[in-house]
Length: 296
Image (cartoon, rainbow, N blue to C red; front, side):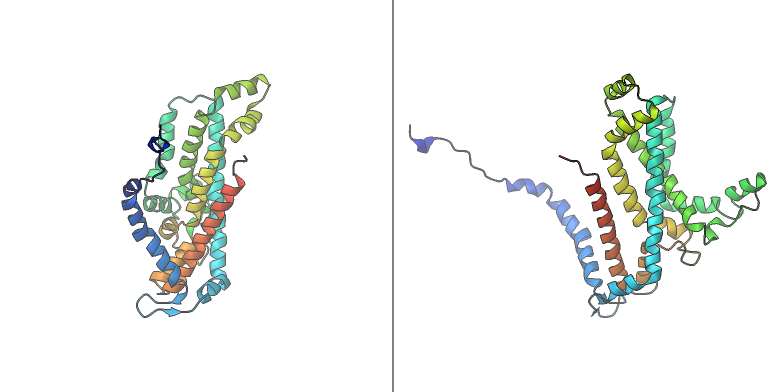
């Protein structure tokens, strides 16, 4: 038999399959890549949004880095990470660990109630909590009822308490998300691991740190990435509750971007700060992924 007649499969690439992702790719280019590229270019210019752009190089970046109010706002964002990320993750892990030991009737109902803040608009959340924190709101009324009038104050009007109390709103919002995520993760852990731990005499704490926590590594990474990103790009909650005040005690980079672009007509400066914030988020997310990377 002639070797010329032997069938040889050819490694042909079927480019027609790429047509399925073409609409999404075009959408991404138009509404994500092009605006980001334009913002990147604007960050090297001095522009008020109307007149002709003036190329100034790295001047806008240098001004923002040397601006103490902006560097202070970045510190505020890192403080918010504690409330948006650390507290919700710790609380969610504690509840996930508790569920292994204790069976709670009607848990699905509780989960739905606790997840409710994730469904609500952040504007609705901000308005509701601004009412709770008001001088004559439920929080101060409750303190007055128990004879703690000296503690009550205008919480969102205090230079010392405004930022942490806005952060507590973030804890309330994000707690439901982390709880649902970790409970779902616990349910996929093989029960044989817990049985083996009990046979070895492991208590509740040892069982949590040696079985539950290692097997929730993937869920913890997802929670960290999501909550840290939300804390850094937070805008609507601060805008509704404090507007960055009192003074600059709750100012964050996104508020500066808004004010520079739409109130001060400093589009070039706002663009450079937006790029800096994007790089900061990308750096932190990359560090999280590197730290929790699976070892082969």
